[in-house]
Image (cartoon, rainbow, N blue to C red; front, side):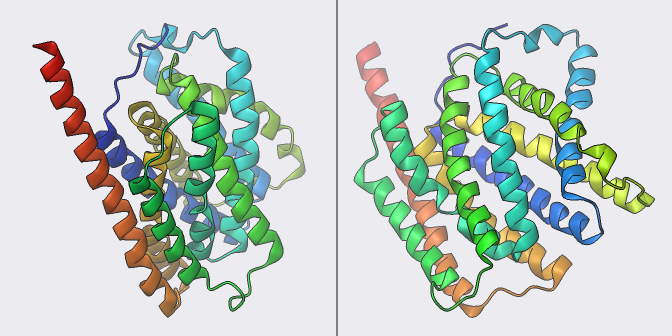
Length: 304
């Protein structure tokens, strides 16, 4: 079953992306918590992916909708899966090696990458409003990270920036897949292709955990599934260079989890840079809403 041509609903896309970011921020906090409990990196990666497969299969089978997984773009799904696996490894690595707020802040460079990539790969037009919002958000990130004053482990920095670039490139690939594939199909093949690869490393790690750790592992997998579904849906409903700006909202969740679970308090600069990031996000929401209303008015006029 191929997907119908997606209808663009930019304001809804922004709201869905905000929900996705909240869920994925919870995922990152759980990854860090599991790592501190001694769960190996390979096992964290495996369960994040594997849990998705049976959940989606059962969901579709009980509704007689397994045909929704049919695809003619296997090669595209495999390419997305391999790049996604590398991006996920860097994202998880940054969360483990750095405080959550700093790891999240580095990922905020993704909109800058995505804006450039969307112009060259999707021929999207990025106007002055979006560029202004992006640079405003980036200024907030510079204030938060305080380049030259805050010591960030080199490997953690590399993982954070690599993760941001992977997020931007994956957004482009997912946007392309959304032209013909359903969000559920995209998420399923990502997990189905990568789980067997990650399973190869399981015999070399200790998988004996207490009940609470297994419950956290399950919660991590479900948060990953939910966040991935929402993220993919957002890219189906709106342009890449707009929806990815909503990733700025993840800073609040990362700061909250950092204080709540890990007693890591963001520096004062975070509270100076954060308002810039929030304003940047709100500016994009307002601009997208205005453009969408103008488009609807034009369509109504032409339809008369």
